[in-house]
Image (cartoon, rainbow over the protein chains, first blue to last red):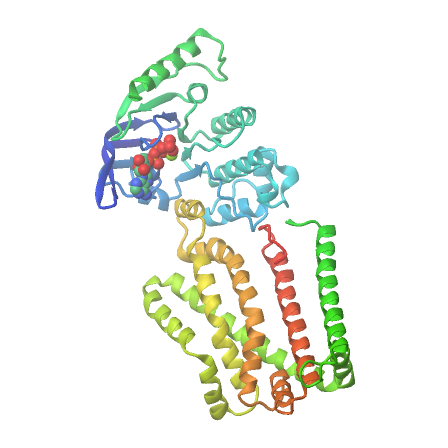
Length: 247
Length: 258
Ligand SMILES: Nc1ncnc2c1ncn2[C@@H]1O[C@H](COP(=O)(O)OP(=O)(O)OP(=O)(O)O)[C@@H](O)[C@H]1O
Ligand SMILES: [Mg+2]
């Protein structure tokens, strides 16, 4: 599903004063593209994602998700959302967390058991989320995203709270799952190498008020070898743009 | 999920029992040693004898008071929780209803109780109403807070799922409010017993409050103390029952044993 953003601006009102966060953002994202967003902390990455998910109405500008505005896209269940806080429902079992989103979304391409198997949680169907480790909780959140069969995945630093190894394993699994469903992904991250490893394109954002500083294409075949010179060149390009961003 | 392992729990229960036992022993010793008259302070042994000797009477009175307290608590809790649900679904009502609730809460119920007795008689109904009036407020305030303070990350998620208010209420807000409900019940449970007893003082045909009042007018202190002991014990049991239930209902939260 294509995403088009034209002249998008947003300002928050903080204590009666206006805080400009996004300024005149223009973006084209092709269907099935995996786009990573990097930028200084507080620049407005989450704000941009929230606007796309219709959790926030922008001050001005146009957002088009597959020919519809965000409200319609959400109403048509095109959006899957995942943030750093997995927001699992602790009062339901792992299985029921999946079953609930399927019921609400009206999707039943897979059984909850299938989805749990896909993320390696088969043995934990009857467990409650609070008994799972942080990594397992994010896996469950991932399974919930898969259950939605959505065309767009908006992911705001989903694995930021995990240790390096778990994180690498999970992003690897995510990539495999993405290749099966082929949704359009917007992936916010602070990790430059992670962005280079996962994305088709890395967008580097400037500090507030945010504009797109650089658009770095990553045309390397997956799985990517981080030791190659080409990969290192991409990492350097992202880092250079980010250096420009940080004052 | 247990905040305190079982062995620790039995141990601390044991310590509490020992302290209560020692206090009673000390009490007994002082009464005997100083030969304190019965109409000032009866010895625990005498209170125990009175209790056992009139166990039928006390059991009957306890049943009456406990029924009033629990029915009042039930009525107060359902009213409080029901109002909270209403206010969370129609926030515009909040101001008006909360002002009314605070008004009811601030009215001295000790002054209302005799009126209800005059209007409704010596039976259980006025006691149940007083108990409900006293207990609904903590439930209302806590449950409303719980409903409103649902995790914003969960609410975000449900919004991206295009869920309606009802779905959000059922799957997010209501479960989020359960721990708050139990916090309220831990306040309201023991309060219900006190409310029922105080209501009985204004005129009742049965119950521990009436027993206490009769004992007081006759300066029958062993009787009075026996009733107080029962009330204290009943309070602990009610509280314990609420904690027991909390652990099972709100299983996803690590609760302390209090
Ligand atoms: N609801 C809000 N009300 C007022 N200001 C807000 C609100 N949400 C975000 N902001 C402000 O907007 C700016 C951008 O916030 P945002 O969360 O989008 O940043 P971010 O790029 O996601 O940062 P990080 O990388 O630290 O997550 C920040 O200065 C923040 O203080
Ligand atoms: Mg953010």
